[in-house]
Image 1: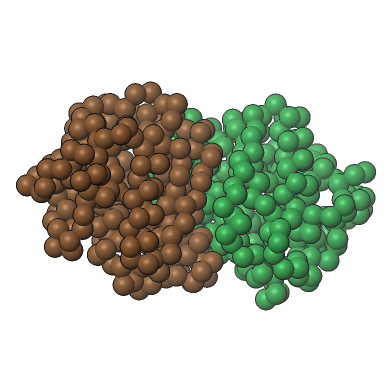
Image 2: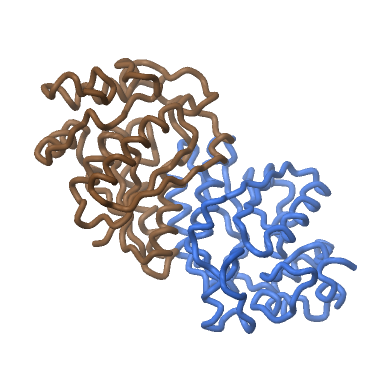
Length: 216
Length: 216
């Protein structure tokens, strides 16, 4: 089950990286002009280097065409819980569809059987392109649209972020070396949807993991 | 049925553009570094301007990662019929998957209901991401992965290029103002798979349409 990981440098995909490191032969990240891409990508580079897994970043300039508070130039990132209606402004239309399609193409080109993605139940409310039905059909499109029947593997699709963090704990992952906050400032803001979710997931973990924005 | 057209500037998507011009509110083209992109895109610009349909080009630099004779720097374009085994070198992995995913994202962002694509039966043998099953699942992924249930519409999926050309004839399309040849030289080479198919499709049409590479 040789895999190519779509790797942001956040908590979920970092857990997936360590969880399946023996199967992952390539990790790719996307720089699509979000406010927090630069912070995340440093950690993506760091972890793949630690594990000796080949990694590269693909820059997607055309995301400038999209309207989302997540992107540079977009409106302000809302504060509150992930499930809140206001959080919809953070949606980037079909972002996972686009990233999966590119990853499927690269997997086909390099004869890698699976594309791994770390979507989870916490994403389902707000992001339609994280939901099980989308993942199922995108996986079938990958299989039917390639010579090597490239498949999509999303092992956390029925887990929440807390469960993912607990997997990471057993794997000894240092979450201080991951980035979540959508605002992309020096430290995690602690107030945006992804910060709130990160805090809930890391409850009882070393507090500095959250507070210092990745620096112990 | 407001639509966004994926528009190459070739015969098929130009026919679709005229065929559904009253529904198409936006046309997008991709410059992905193929040997013939520059030739095609000039015609894409020309026709959309003629019809007053908004149009822009998205540059995809990451296609450099792929291996295909169709791309600049790739091996030589094979000559012969589209169905020949050698023609497989012209495949770009999951190209339609990637273009459709981006188009679905843009359609979602702009609240356009449908993405139009001009794949046809002549593409099915060599290109897996042109086949009906792929289109079906990619369409379902678009519907499930967006808030506005963006759908894929491929009206020529059961037609061959000859049938498309005959539709174009009734619409009065000037095919001398379209580009097919994969080599992207001054004139159509007449020998590569797409040239052979173009010749078959335009049999009995004004010969200059084929001979002079788009210039009467």
